[in-house]
Amino acid sequence: MDASPRLIEGQLHDLGDGFTVRRLLPALQARHVGPFVFFDHFGPARFEPGNGIDVRPHPHIGLATVTWLFEGTIRHRDSLGSLADIAPGAVNWMTAGRGIVHSERTPPEPRRDGQTLHGVQIWLALPQDDAEIAPEFHHHERAALPQIRQLGVDAVLIAGEAYGQTSPVRVFAPMFLLEVRMEAGAELAWPSGHVERGVHVVEGAVGWGELQLGAAQMGVQTGPSAPSLHARTSCRLMLFGGAPLDGERHLWWNFVASTSERIEQAKEDWLARRFNLVPGDEDEFIPLPS
Image (tube, rainbow, N blue to C red; front, side):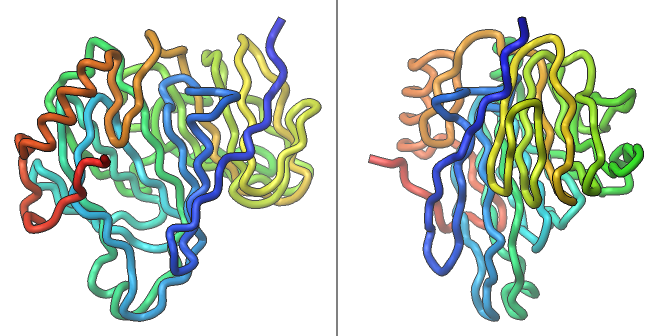
């Protein structure tokens, strides 16, 4: 028998200046959903002229990251020499593999003029066989992403496979990640072929079987099938899921690995400055947490 959908409220963190982040994964109710091991919803936050975000260079291993924006712009730089501004509807997909360093900052013009920043940041664990591959970075504009339209539903497939469509983003395991807009009263069946699934409500309210979800909440469920989603109001959702992970993962700071020994090695490498620098952002870094 399929499990019933479970509610995740998440933990809200105030980073100062009105910028809040809600951590939804990992949670007690679900350490991971398919390959998704980390899910943050940040903002919406208004940055006045002269202000912005400055996430200094920091390392990752064993995962892929994506920041999906609803409002605002973030500039990505990494140790491969990549430089790309991410805007709403575009994908910056970074595969860390055996190790990458990147920074995320507000570009000069939005910093000068001020902006509202709102989006999600997601990490996906790489399969064990791919955990030590060479790092990669790929940018895809919105026009390259498949659009899915049904009665009262308008969705974009960010990554993976869903509803007979395949995203151009390179992934390493069966999965799906969509932004979905639903009109009040609309219904949406889940993509077939995936046994772990979750929905995060960005705006509005949705029913999922017996579970009622409002803004900032998440529901997760495992099983060959699941009840359809029913929009109680007009809403914006993030749908995600995939095949179960090939074993548990250790998460520590920005590192994801199948063994604690690999985490310790990454700590030592960052302390010893063995990771490559970020061209154009070489002067700062985030120290290893104590």
